[in-house]
Image 1 (cartoon, helix red, strand yellow):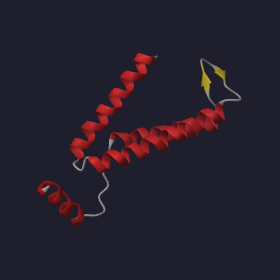
Image 2: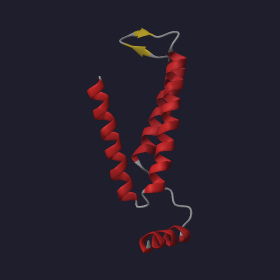
Image 3: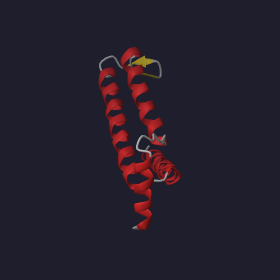
Length: 103
């Protein structure tokens, strides 16, 4: 409890502190990828998906919003930047492992 009070006092002394985290990079990548798909269309193995490009772009926007919300949730649970990085990198690794197992 005393540790949380100390962290709260530290946060009150510097209220505008932006912390970069791995999920920030993932959110930016999803939004950039969605923009790229909206502009150039979705193509896999050279054949374009003419009717699905908009849907695929919106799916990546949805992924970006969900990852952004996950980042906010993790920031509320882990106040220290080092712990936040460890937890978020572990989460990304777990998601990738599950993705490759399902694939």
